[in-house]
Length: 353
Image 1 (cartoon, rainbow, N blue to C red):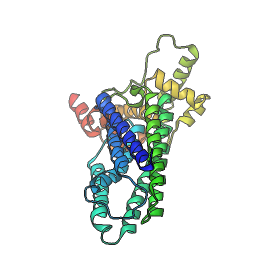
Image 2: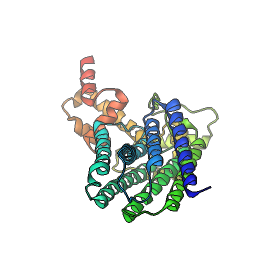
Image 3: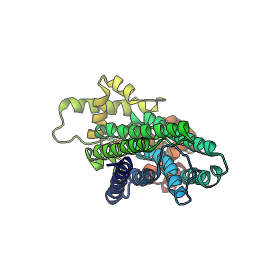
């Protein structure tokens, strides 16, 4: 088999597998944001697999430019995917769509106007620096959010997906910057497409090893109650730890502490982090440590907002006293739990008296 034929086979295998992955995510988890973004990322990766070549020695044909633009814009989708993958409460905003549109449009303009005007190196370097920037954002988001994930079975898979995609994308972006204007030959492109096919297969296999309900939470899942009843068969040691944990939350209100982490909480209980993760996830029903903390904070804020004696206390004061660091996150978290803003909640309670 010739190098060109092998390259075509790798491209076809990658595209086929990515399209199957896209269809599977849309079919099984169409109502889950992280899954929808994952499907969009897989679809954009298919465009990348079909269009990407190492090095640029000639101008890009007009029909090829949309594929390259979609492939470039896919890095924004990857960044959003990592955010949704590690934060069950993440929501899309118009600015996210605008960011994707700007990156995609710049890539398209670079292909059809900037590069043909004699600025190939500038066009390729600028596009790939944007790619590297969003990869860096995705990695930082992964590092910042990973410790809050309480579902042990998906933590390693999530990190593998992000790291594999980031490593491949980052190396390709650097390679494009280094060899721009050069024709590196068919062998380099065959090796690259082979690596892509292997990474896509590895990610698909890793996702198959984890239950979909663990990787992507159901969109209709309600927030768990702060106090959970004891499951049948729970051993006494776990129950004692849960009781101690709830005392820390209810009596000491440890959730008010700035930058409280699962490590700090585990240290107070004198148990390993992994055991505390398992207790909060499997016994209390939480998937994310920050949601666990915020639910306690919101319960305190609800009581304060409904208290006639605190009717004149500013909402931001109540938010800060409850453990939130700023008003924006408090408003978003409060509305996600109650369905109304803090001000609306206070007004409803006052009118109900």
